[in-house]
Amino acid sequence: MQKQGTLWPRQFGGATLVSACASEHIGILTEHYSAMSNRAASFDLQAETYDQRVGLPEQDCQAIVRAVLALAQVQAGDVVLEVGAGTGMLGTWLALPPLCYIGLDLSRGMLAAFQQPLLAHSDTLLLQADGNAPWPLADATVRVIFSSRALHLLDLAHVVRESLRVARPDGAVVILGRVQRQDNSVAAMMQREMLRLLRQHGFYGRRGGPHQRQLLAAYSQHGATVLAPVVVTQWTVAWTPWQSIEAWHTKPGLGGIALPPDVKRTILQALCRWATETFGDLHHEVVSEEAYVLQGVRW
Image (tube, rainbow, N blue to C red; front, side):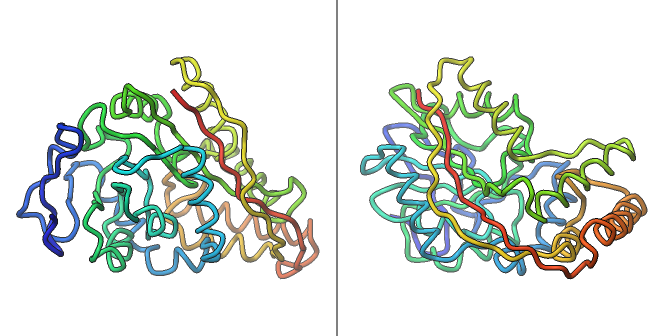
């Protein structure tokens, strides 16, 4: 049994699940990687406003988790790993008995926000760790690897390699979730122009959709079966160009990459000019449809 507020080594299926876990770590187990501190700090700054900026309604979060578990065909005691757990918007509902939940995130600030509702849960573990470094989990222990709007920030080959290492040999799934927007929505058009401006300055941003397709293809090359996409929930959103610019202003970089401050400033100024010319007004509101879609692979 886990003592409240302290992480103890835990055994699942006869194997040590997290080899680095030790009782002297309080609250959140911290994996120290020399290259991650600056990037972690940038996400820490977003912890307080993250859910307000990109959060989903509670009923939608619960529906997404039900769909994930149905796709995964989980059983009691199965280990669920969430890569990019963040503030626990979805992980809070995954971290319920009879499953054993592990949430991994680069940001200690995000995980600190996540930790509060989990204090009474015995079979949960939050790990601060760099997803681009070896994941601090033992081999062949994880039944479900889930990630929502996060894996496009990580190196594709590394994610595939680590997934294969930690996945249970008797069957495992990787399930990816993302928000899908209409191509002609304000948010989608603003993102395309932002990525074009990045390329113009010699930087190449990351888009969730193309990266996800490449990732699924890479898994299939290792013998995985690609699952059909599942649309879990849909909604109508009213969005303005200024909302995109304001959201990007609060981030440390653009397009999932770090940028020199002067380059970021120049790109955002150019975006303001482009959006004014395209939409007539930075605060012009356009209604469009969005959906939360799951897709994954199974071994």
